Image 1 (cartoon, one colour):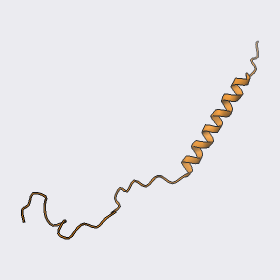
Image 2 (cartoon, helix red, strand yellow; image 1 turned 180 degrees about the horizontal axis):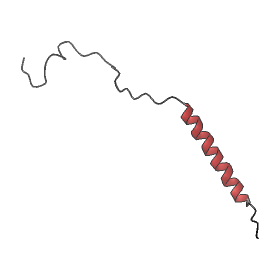
Image 3 (cartoon, one colour; image 1 turned 135 degrees about the vertical axis):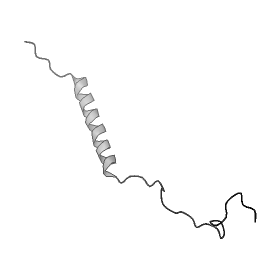
Length: 57
């Protein structure tokens, strides 16, 4: 039975993949980005909320 030994390139690729996994885990630890959904960023102008766009004044 033949035994295959890892090549130096295998070691480099393994270390590269471990580094990618470390970076991904750090990203997953961070809080999700704020998308502004459901958050009011401004107050409506006076009279803006009670008139429809096609309504004449």
